[in-house]
Length: 585
Image 1 (cartoon, rainbow, N blue to C red):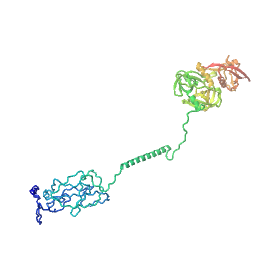
Image 2 (cartoon, helix red, strand yellow; image 1 turned 30 degrees about the horizontal axis):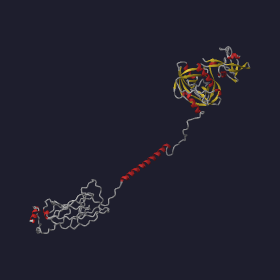
Image 3 (cartoon, one colour; image 1 turned 30 degrees about the vertical axis):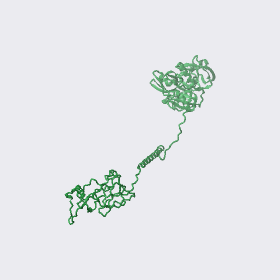
Image 4 (cartoon, rainbow, N blue to C red; image 1 turned 180 degrees about the horizontal axis):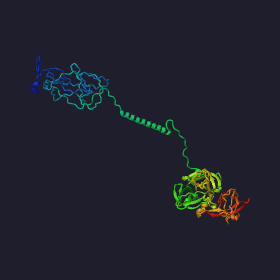
């Protein structure tokens, strides 16, 4: 019963599964239930697939095995081929796992092989045991060669143990332990994926080289390059600055220079005097009568009165003219004429609505001595605020500083202070100050080369060191009279002088002229002076010409008493008189 059931359950062989007996070989009887199965005609196929076509009926179907290990280069190794020689890498491989014995297929499985040559696999197929990854060595092609190393099984999962085959397989001789093989280190997979890789990665071929930490080395290299660049830049900048400053490797000439010192100056120095006097000096521009001129003046008081020369503002006095004043700080204001005197060549103008005026202090011209230091301030050729310095070269120089050259009081004679301080056109009316910044004279005239006595510093000539200033004592009296009355008075003796007399002294005219030689009832008439008398001294000071006598008299105030020394018909006499007064027209 059991035997019949077993036979009934066995698959019915098809006609293509029938065994064929080759020629010359007697047929062998089929094995019975109690017979021992016959040995296979051929050894198991190690390649897992028929390499030479479909298997014949004389060979059982080989079991299916996993593909052999592919080297990193991607080309399978031919069985029995020798890998390329490389330096052996010493490493300790894992001991190979004992291969599991695989049973041979039964005769029924052989008979059930389809024509295509691929045997039908049983429902439950034994799998290789799970173990550590080992190096794979292919099975030999002949039974005499070494048995193959089993392929490592995946470690990610485990299969159930296979059932015992229907027919026990003969014992397989365990393969000998493979010799250590050295393969070159695997290269990096460019695709990052190996379809034949097993779980746990490929086996290690040789000792892996340690991965270099290039990140730290690269950062150090970059930091070093930055430091070198900074140091090189600093050195280059220093060299460039040195070459730019010193003009190259050979260098250039540099001159020593003192540092900036203090701006303060001693009050008695030229700079100190100029600093105190300049705020009170003004530049005057005059237009009128189809003419225009430039001169200088200085402030007398805080009411706005300014003293200057008559010939500076004379063109504006004729009517329709204008006077403009520019202060040292640049402020400009209109001015009006207060009064003028042609005999002394002085005039007073006034500005209104100007605050912060700086009047100059007035000195005493009688105290001046030859050789005293003086400073002239003015606007030569309209150059405002020009300061020049010199000394007093002489005193009581009789000059004409303007006015009409007529006989008597209309001639502008001045008992002037002579100075070598440069005075040029445009300086007229400016102050001549002493070492204490006090005004001692008004710059009025110059003597130019090849020129006769210049009637005022407004002439177009250059300075040759001969400048003349009206003494401040006389100018002060005239300025007071012009401010108070608008007119100035002149001291007179009441005589007319012979301007053509070439002898020593000043001779009184003779009778018969258009004007009387001695003014009746005048100071000279009262003192007993007669026509043709020659005046030789004034208060004991000799005079050598008519101009000198006029200068001596104009140096006094009306009402002053004078002692005159006369030469009358060869006899010397001395008379005393009181100066009269005359008003300028």
